Length: 156
Image (cartoon, rainbow, N blue to C red; front, top):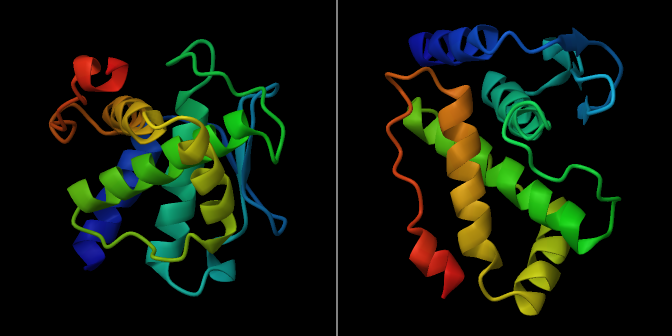
């Protein structure tokens, strides 16, 4: 498992994202284009740290000068829930690609995801497509072998 974690750390470093450690919250600051993460010691397990780091890197990938997703939505809106779903799916895709089990606790996001999917039956397909794009952007080319979701399925 240690070598998988080292590989994940190498993927994070290869993004050259501005990651700042400290505080007790993880977030991506779009206006300043940096990721804030608590110190590694704040996480119960290395896999929890990696899940959080890849979740925030997925948000980072959505910046206008990267994949250009709308990151302007406020907490509690459907757009916010959609971006959280993209970030969480992307983190799961990346960790799975690296052979690391993603976290199973999504309780804080489930309500917004359910509301989103009730409003838009295709939301999960759109989120999966965007999450695949984010994962492929973050992973090095030799790791980014995931196939995009068929655009016709999303449009259906």
